[in-house]
Image (cartoon, rainbow, N blue to C red; front, top):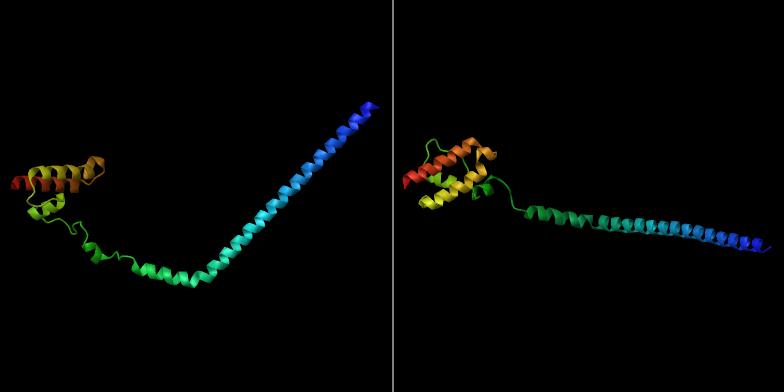
Length: 146
């Protein structure tokens, strides 16, 4: 008889535990649905706000686009880089422009500028052989002028 009572208590505890798990499962499902509903409502309110603000944002966006600096040929002509091709015969001005030094620069500045530019434009490192030849020609021209 004692065995039957202990077994009944154990079975009733198992039933209570199963009932708790079932309720917890339903609670988790319900809370997930509530959170999903709140998320949808937040997206709806944000969309409503954006739709109402769209005309104002469009005018501000267009004003911002008008205030951006222009990237056309005139603004690029004032760039620090030399625009134009190479002259048929190297001149002192062109050699100085290629190396990025003053035409009256000393030999040390010419050497440093040549080294710096050749590191960036060497044909073994993917640079153009034509540009490398022009850079070397500019260095030789300025060195021989001194």
